[in-house]
Length: 295
Ligand SMILES: Nc1ncnc2c1ncn2[C@@H]1O[C@H](COP(=O)(O)OP(=O)(O)O)[C@@H](O)[C@H]1O
Ligand SMILES: [Mg+2]
Picture 1 (cartoon, rainbow, N blue to C red):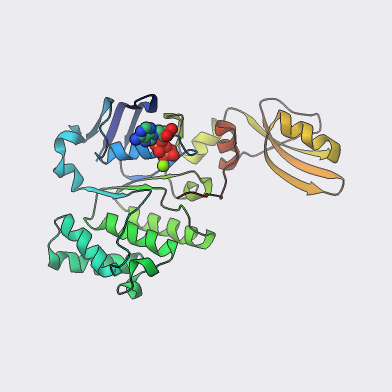
Picture 2: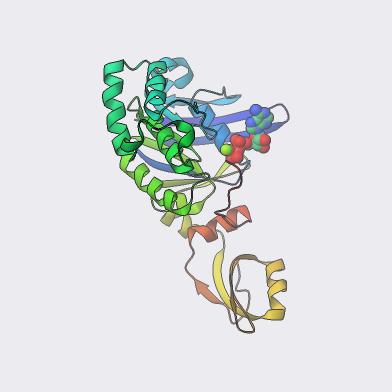
């Protein structure tokens, strides 16, 4: 099982959304991390054969996925970022409908749907209308539809967008459970979504994979270092202006800053162990937010 991208590139009229990406994935959970506009969706849509690359190739066990066509899509499950559904369908009817599109026979579909609804914790909601489901429930049904064909490759584009913190945790657990012998690729702009479940993390910025590896590997190769420093109130602004500040903890008369810098920012600064949040800030120059306004 090997999904291989070689010099993968996608140019739109006046911009390059994905630039020369070369990366090979096998089984396991891969987390594609990047801010909005990084190129995550474009990359995933190419991996799902929904977009034709303008350069490079994608192969599955050595075969070009665009040539494999239907044979490739049979082993693929995809949850799009803007997952569409039919509001008046019940959960069960919706899944039966998707199964029929995918060519799963009704008897097999019924069995599979029963199993999946159980796995995603939605057994009791089978008769509910799609439009009556909460955001988290809809996403779980989104996962169930992607899992209908028991895919070897599962691609989930921002599966946690719009979920509250509790739903997020449940979701991470579900993805870990479903991973098994599959290749799972999920995208997010939220570090905590993949910190614990991704075996490998790909940092994407401006269409390129800037760094990749396990969390430990990425952290040990972090370009700069993390420092904590207690400063007086009047100094806060200067530090905020001159450094990447990953956290500000207010204390009487001042604050404890968490700074990212290649050199010790002050003789009083103390080295700290870097986290993935710090890494995100170091690469992307902005803090990883839990605030996702758009889905
Ligand atoms: N169909 C398109 N035509 C032109 N530009 C596009 C198209 N789709 C995406 N882009 C651009 O490509 C860049 C990457 O977008 P996208 O892949 O959606 O990033 P992400 O999913 O990381 O937010 C963005 O600048 C976006 O505006
Ligand atoms: Mg996207």
